[in-house]
Length: 541
Image (cartoon, rainbow, N blue to C red; front, side):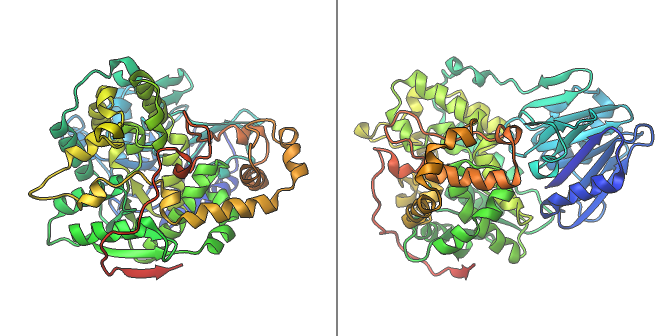
């Protein structure tokens, strides 16, 4: 993972390198650049070394004159090298290099061949192509300056003050000057009515296991984020099974000491599956003190994103300090299987399915953004097995009647995912975790986190400011003082409506209280802290 910047059009290289350094946290290991001799267009790269630590420096040149910069991971790069690109001569062992060779082999029609996550730009004289992965796991922005030059960047902060036009690059698309934006990712499940397959639990288990296997690819130490919820716990359990008893796997959880439901559940999972477990504790006061830095990194003012990113931000810092550079995480399962508690209120199977499709298609603005930017703030790469293309195709085609929760008939949220990994002989997870109620990450770290945060924001915004919110913020006008406070922080770093328009708000449906906390849902049941305990190493931030 890393930070990329492309400027299409001639500009002073020193200026471009300077604005690229605004993303140096994404690539602390090394940096480089390429200036096209024909056009003066420029590629820069801030590198976090994960695959091919010695020869994988970017930009990478192809066989001829094309160069690529890439942020992400291509999981099938070896299959491509050994298969359709076997006649190409490669300069590195880096997974990113296959992108430029695919371009040289197929022109613009190659993104469907990539299995991975990515934001990239290939520059070939006056020709270029930029692309983003199918779901938008990795961030990418684009803009145009007053002189008409185009910019593509991993983060908003690099180009927000350079461009007069600015937007988030749409997931599942590529862009060329000849074609404009082209959607290359068009799965059948985009249409909710095609979800007609009966749930195949064996297939779900096989596809998720294979997805985790792909994401163990690394030349550096790898760990797992373990919240103690179903999704991250399954990923951790599968990873440990694949690695086997002889290979150590570090797991990490975060919470407010003494009151976190997640810490207790994570201890139970770690003891059961045999990871070397670490707990990171933070205080509410530390979280509040970090908000300004966090908004700068997140490039968002969404309430849910900020609430959930704060503990992940502290967790990532502690993980990197232990020498881990890659972690697996559980994002995406709640969108795929209707795991949020508000899904209990879905009025019909058809509307349930339509909402899962909408949520998955908007992940780039929500959980994917949070997972990437709160980890990459410290140079940590997060991999998300639930958002694998093959797994998505299997899971999103399942009929909504099999997914929709119904507690009256003993079907909690994500019922079929739980059943797929229910194994009495060789349990994947402790029973009380496999069937644990959905607890949103920002709640699970400790209920006092959100409660105190809301109270703090109430004190920072006056009634008069709130009454005039629509005047100050006509786009996405904040509806609460908490939202107003975050929007004010965002405006300090990213002023103007064009920056504000890159942010989408996460709001639950089908419930009277639209606060994004899971505890606002009628279906939420307060947990008793009654999980068995282990003795992890505690880390304070």
